[in-house]
Length: 135
Image (cartoon, rainbow, N blue to C red; front, side):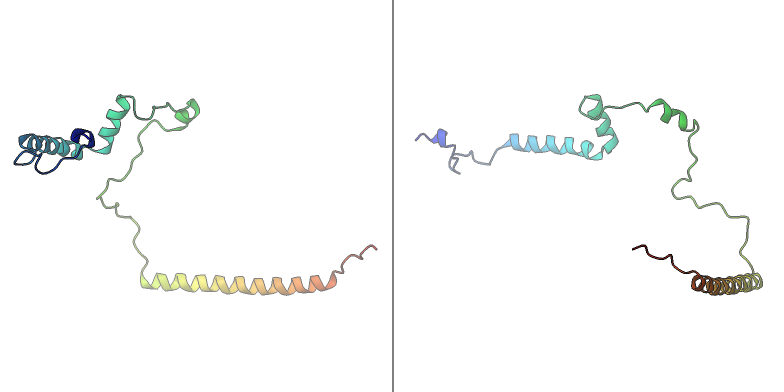
């Protein structure tokens, strides 16, 4: 068979010095193009693709959605900014203990009411007789 048909290249067939200046020029061009493309954000690439007709089609929001949204832009706290200080200060130790005592008293009252309701329910359940079964 003919050697060109088999597409076999041996080291003896290559020119001395590899691919020569064409390979270096191609690698340089590739490197110069890769740097700006790597620096592009996804939005820029997406915008270019959309403008070229390859990206998703932009669909306008229906009227009821557009009308239900507020006209002003929402106020979000920027990243890296601390939340504003609250005007209310923490309770003192005495006030914390008073609040704890108040909550424990409320828990005791609720438990007492629950036990009373439970015992009343048991007495009422004992007085109720089930309906006779029809046979």
